[in-house]
Length: 225
Ligand SMILES: Cc1cc2nc3c(=O)[nH]c(=O)nc-3n(C[C@H](O)[C@H](O)[C@H](O)COP(=O)(O)O)c2cc1C
Image 1 (cartoon, rainbow, N blue to C red):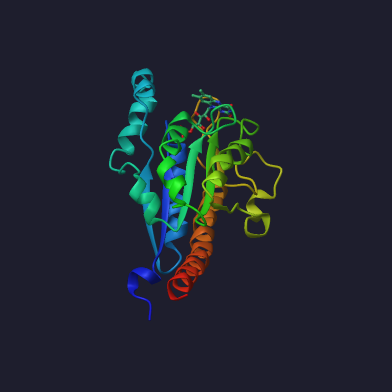
Image 2: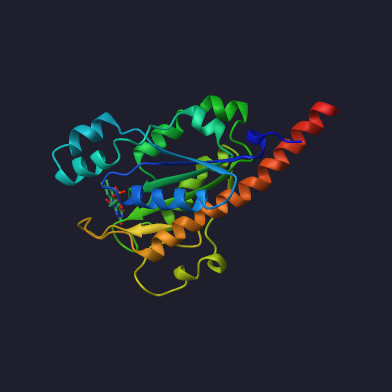
């Protein structure tokens, strides 16, 4: 008989957000993951880089967005180990993840060596200024290190996300949820974008429940042989 912590599925939502759009998406990802019974969710902030803090602190929009996130704990390696599924949020930087997220991923060498993140479920959500600014490329390019770490990628397929099967200017793709901040950052996430974010969270929780059981079964098999 499995004990309570063996039955629980752990989902980590680790994100970075300069102006708060990715943060709002992260909150919806959390909501979706929490909607699956037996799921424990941690929302964690990827640490700011000192250079960026210095450069951006003169901007009111940055300061206010950081104040709104002040209560969110910073992500640690223990959070990564704890999780059965890890969902990453990053605004685009020229079609790639932010330096903040890359810097954090670049601290995971010991976890890579130990295979600690192998077979964990993963997904990526983003925010871009414009519709062609990196909605798809940011998710796809973020995958490269996640695949090195051995994670199992899930996206947000059309079948479960009819709201992205449109020609309107909304964020999101089969690769993952996205929102559009607008060229001046004034646009806020709309309901269909938040729905795709919730769906990534719930899908990750559902898939991680299964992959966790697979890992547990393999571990028990190794121990008893
Ligand atoms: C250095 C830099 C590069 C950026 N590159 C792009 C880009 O290539 N395409 C785009 O649409 N937006 C680009 N942006 C805008 C950000 O994506 C936008 O500020 C972000 O989506 C807002 O998300 P946040 O509120 O979570 O920080 C860039 C912003 C910065 C600071």
